[in-house]
Length: 479
Image (cartoon, rainbow, N blue to C red; front, side):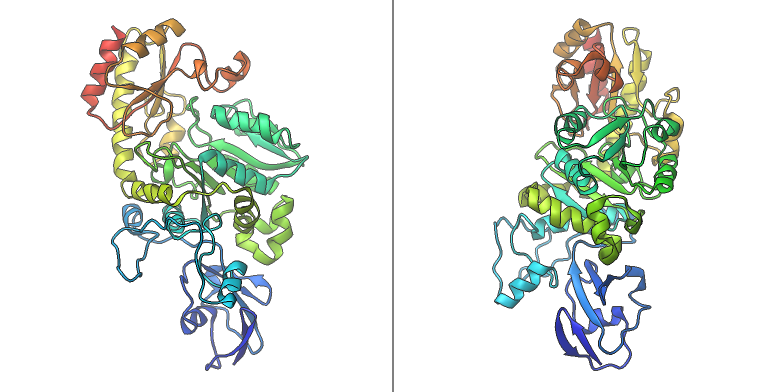
């Protein structure tokens, strides 16, 4: 049978051949990562074994990113991403700390540049260490593919630049992280993209801010620091009705606590600096297309332009090739290496973070000096029921509590001995911060309250220390 494969005519010594069989016959590299274009149309991976080739068909092998695996979460966390195979067979993914990669021939370089052959050219566009991390994270989320970025903010920016242009709008939750709100206000607004905030987590309030120019619904799976929790299933239905994707910053929940794909989320965004990295060692970010959205129905111009050809991977194709590569917010190989290692112990750490936070929240709830405690694991918390429904029985490691005023908050923070006075969360160490005087210092009182921030609020990232030691430090500081 004569086929045109990656632009070249080839004779295949078989009269009947499926796409899946062609991958084997042609010894295609990284078959779990390859996308196949047949006569100008990208095929669904599930059809590889059912689509038979015929004489004269044109087949292109395209590499964007790969699929997930069907093993248990912890097995994927340990073994996902890196398959080994270099001459020394290292047990851990090596750090490919290089700016560029050599090719054997000019033809090979052209094929890699065009995406017809698996390989690497320049670390801003792709790097083996970074690819291994992307593959592992994607496997944990059971997604279509993942893209790693230089930070969580870079991940958010890349996703929204992919989906919006001047005149478009985003429907967002009100209680977002301060950095995200400033990104919307200081950057996206300047380029003509408007963000409309829902008054609450009630799905009806999101519907009220959606119109014909809305291109995405944006939420956090657990608000930081408001700790409010959206009904992801309900928002997914709203998104489907309006043909707009639901984007969820899942930094606080991670793939371990929340199966975001199951609840209809279309794109998961992460600051990998936090729980995924685990020890506060480096900055990183990533996003995952979870495979729920039909990109042929998108209203986003850039994605719609390529959706007839790229179909399921249209969003990933634009996000990686047009936005991530051209804006340069790439992950350093060493940072990807650290994140890869972090994923191996993610489930173990999240269990300790969550159980420690639960114990500390219960202690604070009973303390006479504490006016209010917010933690979704508490039975009396207004988001406890939706948290029980969406999470795996654990509620992550962030909590907030209120004292009488700012002066009392500062006095408490200054009295801590074990706990660190630091921004960030998801660190192995317990950290505290006064959000109103730091992250939200430039916010108006009205905007700060919308984000759940008041002058009497303290945010705690509960670490991995012995819980008795953490509670003892809080107890002495509250005296």
